Length: 423
Image (cartoon, rainbow, N blue to C red):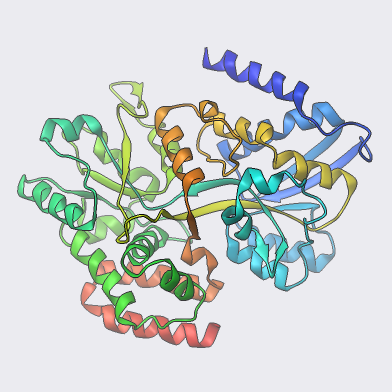
């Protein structure tokens, strides 16, 4: 039934997408370069297929994980793609500062401002100019668990950081490992730990401090930054499955599978919304996991009640070459009709308010989408805002901290040295 529904949705979108054939050229090719490979590439191609059918314009996509190096080479050679998908706001700001990204202010339709909201538009801007639009987003700071195991043990999702620490100790007292944690991620190993530090700092210090710190305006040796690291250390100290060596060697996408073994190897997994794609690949008793039944998440409330600050990441679409075909593709991708194709396939959240919740494949993804749409303050992943040297030093400091927590002060001093040289 789901396959039939997906086919029907694609045919429907191919027939109702609005930009008419009278708008500029209806033939040609749009070249797009981005970080999506595997299932993400498949989802993007499914997203643009109705556009190709409707307009006759061919979308030629090329994906590579080492996006920065390839894009830099193409720009230097004078052969950039028409459009580029960026994984971080830091890449957006860098390319914009180099004059490579063109403004989308005259490209996007006026109604888009109402569909996206000011917070999501702001994250795609540089110096007041709209330089990119989100293709999809991810929520950070989510804690995942198995409802079945939780109920069997009598646990309840905690509401704040104090309750989380209490739950961690309670799980330990029962002789189990509270946390699944894996920091291995090829050349970017360590980034899952930066998510932890950022999430804690955002809750403890507030969005204004977080924003200034992420922009390199505050010292790494400040008490608030140190406190965030220490808070993380107290939570994970002797409470992670596999110990320090296991944490350093285990891939972030696989470590959460320990929640679904019998007995579980770990109980909680701090991951972004895209981790559901990894969970769905795991099979328990020969059957794929079911969202809401086999895995679910809770959020930790901010210290200031009444706010809804969310740490997010996301992929943004920018323009290198202004052609009629490229303009049409940008407009199309920004529409709710286009974005619901990807969210229906799973693994993505749209910040477009007009994407209906029933376009999402399950209750868990619908819950995450509602959180993203309702957020009153959206803060981008801090490490994804940092220059490459600062980001790399942050990743490496996380790995060193796991190996030896007693080195925290020297690690923060080293990070501060990198900050003074980088910004």
